[in-house]
Image (cartoon, rainbow, N blue to C red):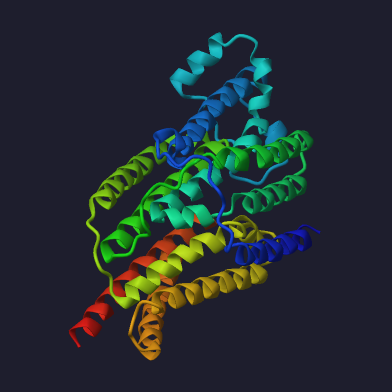
Length: 377
């Protein structure tokens, strides 16, 4: 039953994403301030998630004597590595009044915060890429798609808090898009040069690593993993800051036809992939991997078709040259993606992130090199 409903969500969200790109959403307010940047609110939501983790640890320590087995038995392995040996948390737990009132910190708060967390992370990446992509990222279809997927997973992992979690997820699905509509797209044009694309891919990969770390250490209630994950998170944060500082200072540069096509295609991919991303991800684990792969290929094909068409309008390069250059870049990128996926361990999302990063870096490098060859000729 889960596979059937999830398959329907994959198909419907993919169709909605491909059909709805013509209508960019209207954003309220155009003044780009810190309070209207998705990255700022991503930091706020992440902070609240970690505060809730501390409160949940206190609740489990005081009320359940540090044993989460009563709820962990309903969930997959890999949850509830508590930081109950942390001296700061232990000290707080000793003096916290009425710890039973913290029961809502277990599962319920995270159920409300997970949607804004993933939506804000994706919109931050879209805003880095360019204002047009940010405006075309349709949030209401995303909220419906993600909320339905989250609720379906909740039902498949039924526990004493499932009803509360579903109600909170539906409420979050209504509140999140309404709040996101107040964010601004910024004034950045779409990234186009080799340096801009490289800075964007590095930034997105670093943010992706941080998002995965937050998922493991906080959203899966593994605060005990935070000490081990801290060096990796600090390195990813450092790379992210440096990449964004460089991206803001890069001068405008004319790109070759291959890089122009890659940039346009990547922008369309971000637009098309937003809504079906979560159903496709869970389809891999819940019985519809072939449908997930097919939907992903359809999205990639649509993004490449739109990107090449858009780039070709401003180029005199023959279409055969386009085809040869992009085909070579795609083959090299696919090989790099396979290598990245195979050598990376951990969660499936981490392996997919490594594969995507390797793919785009090599595609950019190949297209940049071929553009130089074409320009020399």
